[in-house]
Length: 145
Image 1: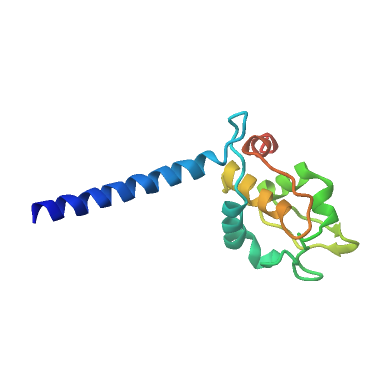
Image 2: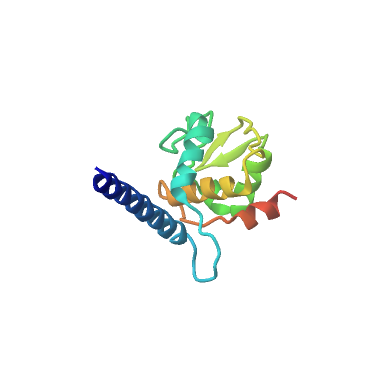
């Protein structure tokens, strides 16, 4: 009986050890050669789903005449810093996206962390035919000023 308990305990400990190695390995896969954290589009998708998709829709298509599309968006892709500022501070006034006018205010999302904003914008830029730009927390922090 003691041998069986010891063997089961050993297997459980070994399994948790292997899981932690896998988690650690995955964590370090997000670090580049310069030891800078690479943004995670999967984490960005979670933020997008919770915060952005009600207006911009799960597909990034927006709602015609009301909420602009993020998919293949000339407005989004033209100015990275403007996109970051818009998420942080929101916006009012008319904008032209892909040749169509939108005048619905965008609420500020300044309560999101720099990392969350970097992740969500990295996700948006990596999706729906956009320019695949990478946003870093440092870039977001610079636009908070």
